[in-house]
Image: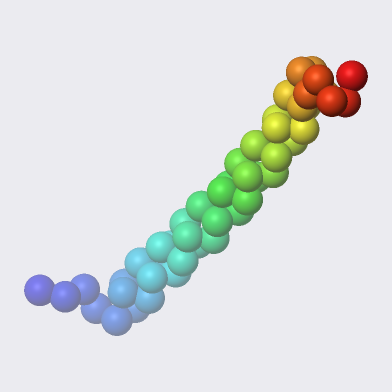
Length: 50
């Protein structure tokens, strides 16, 4: 049994919204990982840099 078309559209919109939210959060996580990597490199510089 399939839901009526208006309900299918609402479900699709909800799922699209969740996809966008997941993509935004993934970008935030990647930015934080890059930032963390930079901070760790400053905290523990390589012997060549010292």
